[in-house]
Length: 246
Image (cartoon, rainbow, N blue to C red; front, side, top):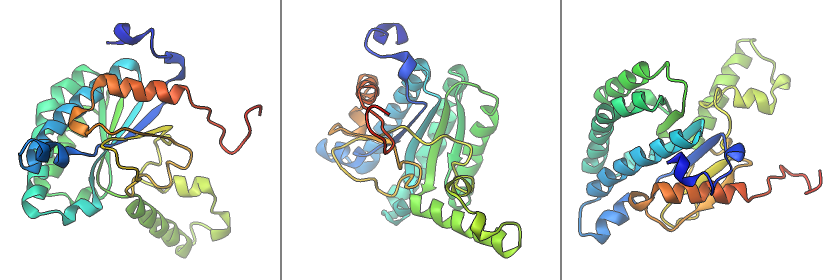
């Protein structure tokens, strides 16, 4: 694939970290007269394609908004179906992750997941731990507000125990207590399905991320569309509060 697109993309200006809100599975299924879970199943195939594309072009970190803390409020049959999909997708894609040198990690309230899901994910995490290529981050039972809340609690506890003085707290202190403490902030955030919302995703981390919105529903999001988002990013001017000539 890299050879096919090398004339279209600048490999010296790749974003180190791309985050994606994978939206539109339910609408994709509804348009075809199917239940929402069929859309989620198709969405899993898209995940495999995009992970492969990211690994092939040299992206170092890819975070996928897989299951939010708010998603627990969905109908129980859909939640159960999604949990089962996590198990089956983990088992099915392990060999592919190993082949593509992809390391899997998760962020979010891991302990809130059913034990069977925890076991399945942990197995993949352990078996891919030594891989040195793309780091695939699944945000599961995650929200930006959850992340910030647990960060505040952690810092407050250290202050209470005398391990930290509140006057010493800096943005770096906050970053070091988020679930993404060992991960660079995403330069590019992609959202599919035509919605223009952040939806409680990586609220602290995307302070200076470039945002890319597309009307394409996640099950139809292709490798080519992913590359289009990368090329769009490469045409942006990232100022970080400065002016063009600084």
